Image (cartoon, rainbow, N blue to C red; front, side):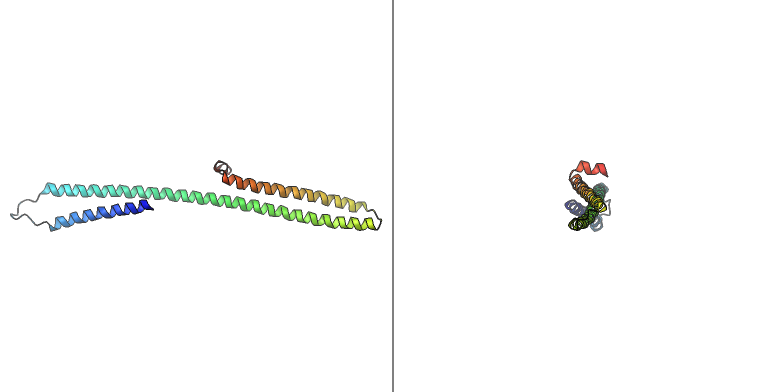
Length: 171
């Protein structure tokens, strides 16, 4: 931002110098004898003014290039941040999905265990209830494992975002 202000100041100074030169040319009284005006001095002033103007044009072009570069960097940074946010959102959604699956499996396991206890209290041994209970327990273990994997993947995604080399490899 300071560069832009400096460039603007330099452009303003150059324009003021050119304006003073033009006013000087207009205000210069003709020679008293109607003789020739010092053409060499006027040409030198004109050359200096054109040189100053060209210098300022170059400075302006350089400023424009720097601004374009900064805009490109900003867009890259925004794209990177959006990709990171999307990856984090995806990991969070996967964890949520696996936790819901784990909750359902645990509820089913509790219901089957309750049915087994009731059957045991009545002295009735039901092989179907035992099988259902075992299946529910296995499902609960699988759901817990899947939730741990999703949680580890979310942690991995967060760590990859902190390591610049890793984040660009996945993109």
